[in-house]
Image 1 (tube, rainbow, N blue to C red):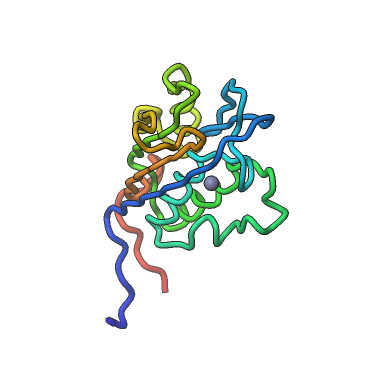
Image 2 (cartoon, rainbow, N blue to C red):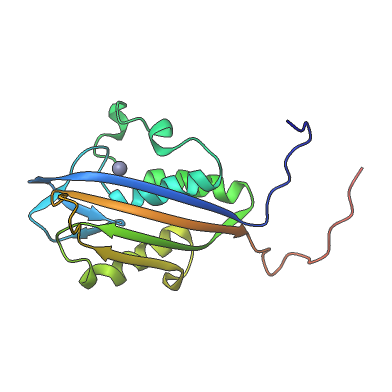
Length: 179
Ligand SMILES: [Zn+2]
């Protein structure tokens, strides 16, 4: 192993996966948006399968511990928690390391409800949470053909990070080192 510190790469890629089971009598939240449906996603926190996969993609890009390590399902604090909390922690790590989201692409796999009518709202909300325009948020929804997974929602996400841009008011040239 080299002993010198690894210089930060210009870009970093992250991948996240998550799945949750549908249960009756709970609200359905996907990508931070409430969707009208007779079932919701159970399990960890509010069950937002898309925000969990995005959080893990961001954490993975930073080679940070994953969502389950940072927010263990066994911890009662996270029962029913808004998954935006998890995403914000991941974004804080991204920003602290000097990165910003370049773009994100997500695939949702679920038999119902149809995502199409809500895709614009989900992309807008995810873009807002990641501080990027909705045009940088890809969202595809598929039905689980041949997978026998009609009672599950699955999300796959890839995210690309790039160096955060300097603020326009900041000087372009490197400031002289102070001693
Ligand atoms: Zn999850």
